[in-house]
Image (cartoon, rainbow, N blue to C red; front, top):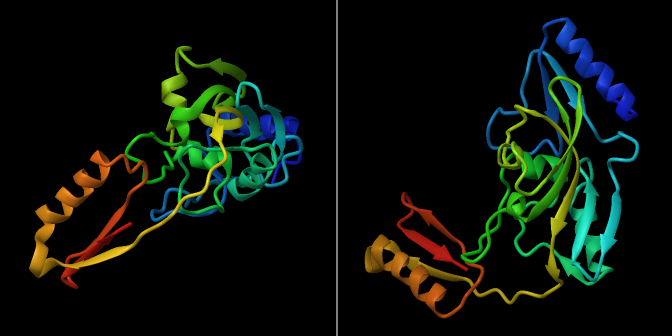
Length: 212
């Protein structure tokens, strides 16, 4: 559990010199074993200066956030400035860096994932170098969903939108009566009506599905 960026750099350099592997863990949320390792596990929850809300520009609707900050905290801080992510994953316990690294997304037909909103990054590479990347720089695309293979996201600057409220309508259908193709048509129709956020869950063994 590194306390400073200097501590983290030493850990990375030590792993390189000892030919060992590192694995980064954020909110410890995954449906896979991506954070499991027999080597060194790094937790950034105590990394000074990189677990907080760092800077916001209301005029340009941008915010720079530490990679170790939890998404729920980021949302609360952004709301106080009248800003929000245009799309957001359904679990608030991820860290900003972890959400970026794993391609966390919401259920929007208009927006991409959190990584698509990034305009700048500060990262620590696997070689122990700190890089500052901007949208369009070589390597920026790789860092957007890097699955922990390239290094550590220290800071991320996002292009945001105005804060908003959502109304949710939930519908459930019997698969035997409507069928999977009918469900897809409903998704398409909702999109044509200008519904910007939509998701559906299919339970093939239960014979029904729902969308909201």
